Image (cartoon, rainbow, N blue to C red):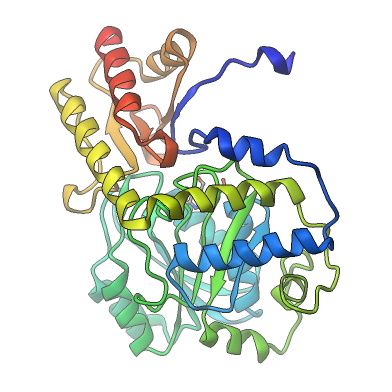
Length: 367
Ligand SMILES: Cc1ncc(COP(=O)(O)O)c(C=O)c1O
């Protein structure tokens, strides 16, 4: 493949989203050393900007080298020791992935589920705690990318904290596109990804740990199961010690730095409002075409629109024509929704009226 001939796409799937040219230009800046004072200044600024975007004062806030799944593993393996009890709330593919990660880390995992597209009532979590608890950690995915539903974190957080557990929240799809308030919601461990509403290429995973989570980590009896993701060591590179642990992905960090600058220049509230208004335009256009949403409408995510492919339509053939003839990428259904659904992402740079007009125009011609 000749990279110079690469065909650009409108990225309207579940991630990655379109990337601002400023971010791509930042990635092309000269590579410097991972202990160069200039690079260390960049890391400090990334931490400060991540604190602003996560809405937290947490000192232990940084970008893990790896995609969103690395952030998931980082949060789980640093909090869990073999034999610890963890409750994982399953409402789609990524909750299931979190329970798998927890089991591999040696947790005694309990799960509760709701049908795909639905959300948990706090009472369900209370019942699970009464039945199988106490738990050290309760894990939940805020924005479930496989279904398009947003879990109501604040009431869940209250139940979890009353029971003395730590709350672990996946914000891979939500961060930068809708409200995430780590301190206000009392989230103890939170991870995200770069390639969705932050509109940066995939490759880093922002994470943040509350003082309570740090205390639990400080009292561990056993070593963290993963050497690479052990926060005790990684934090000594991101902190004032600057101890070598692994070579930071230099140019990926340039990209995240620029992407975060763009997010904060726009302003978080303005960015959430933009995702909402673009979502409303997409929704009304899809409904005009007779296309139905799959998630509970009261909890629909703005940035991820999981919809039923109309009866009699070959959903894979439509996706292929969108890509081949219109250079528009949308996502397929996952798991229970495989073969039946499309997932249309309007994340970050892809949340514009232009994107909505392009995908609706193409679908009108194809259906
Ligand atoms: C909610 C959620 N969590 C975790 C992940 C895993 O992220 P990654 O694919 O970047 O490893 C994804 C990816 O789509 C996701 O949507």
